[in-house]
Amino acid sequence: MTSRERILTALGHNEPDRVPIDLGGMRSTGIHVKAYRKLADYLGYCDLPVRVFDVHQMLAFVDEEIRREVHSDAIELKRLNGGFGTRIDSWNGRDIFDDGSRYLFPDGFDPKVKEDGSLVIERDGVEVATMPRGGHYFDRSYFPLAHTGRKEEISALVLPRLTGEEIEFLKAQLTGILESTDCAVIGAFGGNFLEAGHSMFGYQEF
Image 1 (cartoon, rainbow, N blue to C red):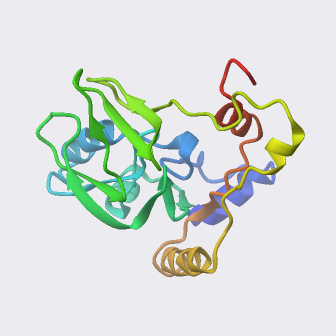
Image 2 (cartoon, one colour):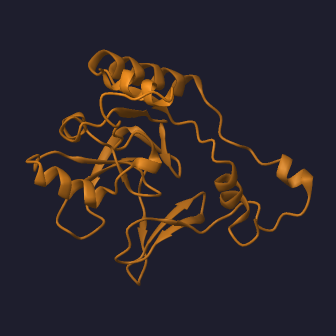
């Protein structure tokens, strides 16, 4: 039974040959880059570069070598945006955790270091996210609708759209997955209804 067949069988409420496994098939089943580095080292892939595809949560791109080792049945079809305006079609190496490892971050990831050692991401001069010194991920610090009380202001908010460039990126990525694996593909589309409200208004206001 292929990975795709296994997951479809389980979704159809039938018993597959084994329980489907998912590591990194979506953000909710993802793995932090520091944990992924340790996993890769433990499995003998000490020279494998660790790519960070989600800079907000610091989630690692699960490489095919690792996916096969853990018998994961799912692969995420990733969006081009790696978070906070970054792009995962090119990478830059740096170590922000001071653990001696070099991680590959999406193009456009360039946090500023504050006096207290915390990291800050700015967009158009606005501080949008922070990571305390010794932290593991970024917390949002900017909520565009936090002080909004009028429908007109909400309607005026410009939301990101799927561009032709990203469609081509997704097509090429999907073709590669289908040609090289028998995995189920989970498309990341960002349908986080409640999370979107938190991101726009802030946790307390929403």
